[in-house]
Amino acid sequence: SAVISQKPSRDICQRGTSLTIQCQVDSQVTMMFWYRQQPGQSLTLIATANQGSEATYESGFVIDKFPISRPNLTFSTLTVSNMSPEDSSIYLCSVGSRVEQYFGPGTRLTVT
Amino acid sequence: AQSVTQPDIHITVSEGASLELRCNYSYGATPYLFWYVQSPGQGLQLLLKYFSGDTLVQGIKGFEAEFKRSQSSFNLRKPSVHWSDAAEYFCAAISNFGNEKLTFGTGTRLTIIP
Image (tube, rainbow over all chains, first blue to last red; front, top):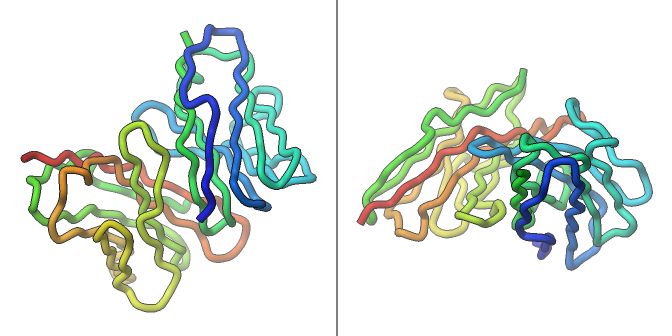
């Protein structure tokens, strides 16, 4: 399986600001996914990011709030914009196929 | 609607004892099934997966899971737990056709006592 890293591993941010989370993979992958894990909750898919195309967002998530870039086959970023305390979560990227995914270590975000 | 249910929010087991974590799914047809583990401060690690065939699936770290179609279940087991198994365990499923997304259960937190 691929080795996936995320930066930052954690951050504390003030409301109204934005944070960009990076996801780096050690091999080329077609599909990358971004998930949110709110405190005490399970994982919720935010969007699917394929290289060379616009990200596909799930219901309840919009590009203005969570813009995603996918400049190449090994890298993606997720930005959490205009943050509020409700955005405090762990954000995880994953790679693989629709039916089999491998996850990064996550970014723990706290918004104050 | 398709769903994955993990009935136990928190389980406490003595070190060396056996473990079974429950997972039930609700899908029109048998989905692909997965168990992931999330250790404190870590991402998710895939323990095992079931696509088809033998209903008893072996995974990493000594875990196994049994698929039971009649009960719509995919329970995770380990014969003897170690303190390092303390973590959050997630069952997940995805339809084997169409464009559905991976659906996770709400997780079971496992505590190991000496």
